[in-house]
Length: 393
Image (cartoon, rainbow, N blue to C red; front, side, top):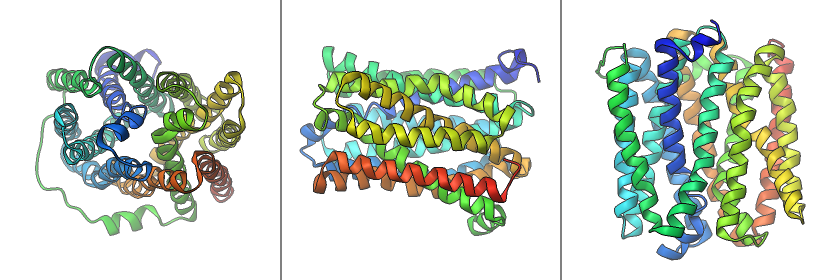
């Protein structure tokens, strides 16, 4: 496949639409993180409860990963994509109108479930469209993830400054509505529905029949704890532990993902050339060092440099992982295979925000980020073991 085909024709349009959907959804989802201090004050909740709120979003994401991937395998990935977008719209609308915490929490849960379905079906969709250069295709996909994450800061700053913070989620719902229309008009795949055959235990056994995949599953689960814990609480950490204003902390939060816009396609390219696991080991070690340095940074430049280093490791991991797994699994069952694995490590990762919140309430935000740094370092060890028993990485 030539580089031009990645951006032109049907495959390029579908990649662009899916990337846009990811960008919109993540812009809204991760706007919750820099808004957590405001949410905590509005609904009068503690750090532990706010951590549980973010954990609820990610556990909802985990629950739908396997069934959504299986449905996309058996019937139609566009059906799942459009249905997931509708759930996302409902969730973001609930955040706009929420006057009680229970409604806000329900909206957060719906957003998690919608995003889980959208991601799972999107991986199947992109995998089917791009036979070659999958590392670059997944890198572009993850660049959109990071772009949306960075744009969440713009959303927060604008609406905190000029309007109600809850209204920040309204344009996300509107944009996803437009995307449903564009997806319906451009897809060449039929919309099919039915009841998928689900056998999660058999699916799990089929993908964990090698030692390398088992080790990689544990490693990915650990990285997801770091991802969800750090991205959920980084703005609050910068605000409470480093003394930055809410707005300035949001800008630094955006830097985490702005770096990822460049790092993820670069990681995909390097993975295609030098090996996905080898590239992931190097980037993960650097990311763990960056996270530990962040807890000790005393100047603005040191804080920014630490975030950049952490971002390279954190954002590079996922396109490298997915491309490695996409080559490992049978393409006809890749949705179910990736779905069951993602269910496990998203479920494990959903404990990250709760873990950070509880440790922060008990010991402070700095020790909670020390813990995340240690877990990230252990992830690099897991990758090294995986590569040792599976030299093809």
